[in-house]
Length: 113
Image (cartoon, rainbow, N blue to C red; front, side):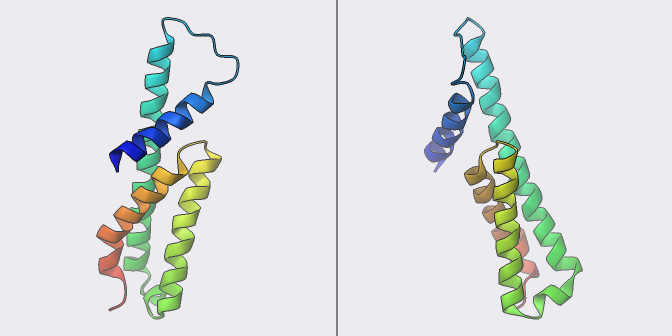
């Protein structure tokens, strides 16, 4: 799993440097910095959305009266994470994966039985 995450973030990092890139002695440090920025930002966005979904289902109990409503809200929040991270030129796949893990861990307890 971590090999996939690293390869996706590394691909996005190198893709950002492909136009007019002159390789100097600072280039590996720039690539490494961009790599860590993409990784941390994507994971942070995913965790934030997962926690927001957990609090949303905890505080607004009317969302849990219907299984279709619950499913729709979960799907919308997950897709919103993907779209926001892609619009910010982060890794949408990593954000979506992190959102899913966070939702599975925290939001599951706030859904209807």
